[in-house]
Amino acid sequence: MREIDAQAEADGHSIEYADMLLLRFGEFILKGKNRSRFEKTVFRHVKEMVKPYPNVNLSKEFGRIYIELNGEPAEELITALKNVFGIASISPVKVARSEFEDILSVSRTFLKIIAPAAGTSFKVNARRVWKGFPHGSLEMNKLISTPLLQGYPGLLVDVKSPQLEMKIEIREEHTYIFCENIAGVGGFPLGTNGKAMLLLSGGIDSPVAGWSSMRRGLEVECVHFYSYPYTSELARQKVVDLTRVLSRYAGTIKLHLVPFTEVQTSFTGIGQDNLIITLMRRAMLRIATKLAEQEGALALVTGESLGQVASQTLSSMNVIGRATALPLLRPLIMMDKSDIVGLSQTIGTYELSILPYEDCCTLFVPKSPTTNPNLRIVDKIEATLPGYSALLDAAAAGTEKVIITPYGNEKPSDVVTAEAGLQEEWF
Ligand code: ATP
Ligand code: MG
Image 1: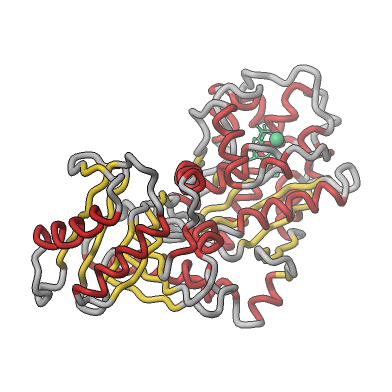
Image 2 (image 1 turned 180 degrees about the vertical axis):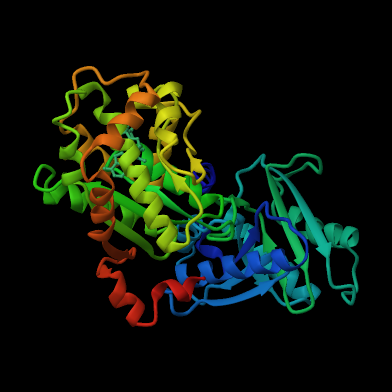
């Protein structure tokens, strides 16, 4: 998109010429029932994203969605629609009646607005989808390009790899004229691959892991562990705000806020400070597993990346991961930090993530956390901690659940359910 914007700027035009946006579906080229379910999900997601623009008109056809703009801003809508998972590309389109004279006239106007610089290589690529149209595709290429080239003597013809390819798609209802193909975010439509619980800290990594999971079609609920009063109200707000950014990609997200102080402080007196992080991570996984069972989620997601810190060595992950029987998904496991930072900037979570509020994991952190915990010792500590399992149950039971939307006004999830459920509207 940036490239195309730059090109548009250089050419002195914007995409506001468009009457319509043409959205193409992404990689989920599945057959039969699944395909139609996936397409319906994308359509619902698109419908949600265009809600602030009341004049647009949506329609769906095999493999694509049309959005008639009726004066709504193309640029703004494209920015929003680039967040919709399952959309592979977006073209701003000028629409003509499917009659030769009108197609030629709109093509002329289109070229005038695009105003290609002298020396630009050019080609018309017509496709007659509607066989009732009197001229074939090849014939139309000639019939349209000849008068256009006469009007623009500076254009050079290049049929192999032109800088400007004017596509003309002739259908019965309308003819679509376009030259840009703006990349969408791709991936799978939201929620079509099931649901997972994302362990969301206030850091850089876990929001990116959440976005990556949603892009693969997972519905995500967020779980955050806080240790009030050791962590502040601001730290909690940061996580609410991060979830709100993620909800731009999902419509609504359920956030579980787990009181973790008691569990965490239960580890401090046992004289094994170098194992505290290991114990804390395992406790988080156990509580998140309980919440997953309540919510019908089939996996846990974390922002771990191999070797990044002591708890993310293979040996640590081996001991920590055994605390849950659910699949533990780590979308960032093989990524470099710089790439993760780049993604967090692109999806809009970076600026929030770098705010300096304490996370519960940075409290009581030992000087030298182990990179190689011993599973037998960890198991034994947990088995002998008095009332440990009741502590975990109490943390899960004391969890506050909030539905977060992109627009603020978050509500406790039971209120939302009583109001007939924002969630249900989605899935
Ligand atoms: P992040 O940037 O996501 O905080 P990190 O590199 O700082 O990751 P850790 O702090 O070791 O790594 O945490 C590893 C993972 O454990 C996080 O990515 C997140 O999924 C989970 N996690 C850590 N702290 C919390 C928390 N307070 N609440 C929920 N999940 C957490
Ligand atoms: Mg962290």
